[in-house]
Image (cartoon, rainbow, N blue to C red; front, side):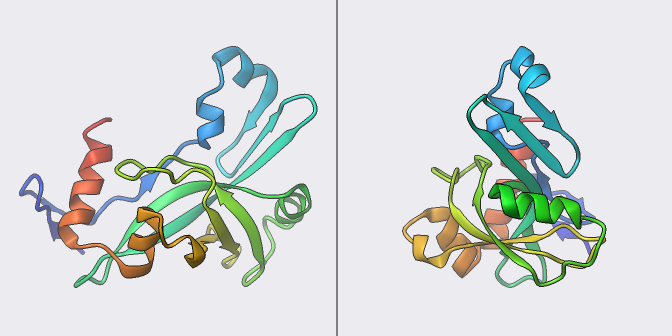
Length: 168
């Protein structure tokens, strides 16, 4: 599927997913703390702060794009409780499809204010796909959650995509 970008005018084969390489809380660590406190892989991140351990998994959050068959796809990180994190990690290669965990969104999404720590449900997909993230609709006063509920225009999706790509 290709789309004409309303920002740059070029024809792209498909809108790229906006993927975060780590949770926000990993990025704000010093290089020394990353080496001594954190473990980061493609799908898991653990940060140990002495008396507190934060656990994150990588997942996908889609915002519908109106008048389009596509979504604005974000590869995000979500924090889970110790119990849910251990269960997910222990069964990572199994089919957990349909299992649901409570979590907090742990990325600052460009173009939005206040996306850190939004309450979410994380729903497992078949073993070869990352879980899907669904923000709690009770937070509908948040612009990101409003866009998740109502969808965004194609122009908005293009603009948000370029907001990230232009920083790279």
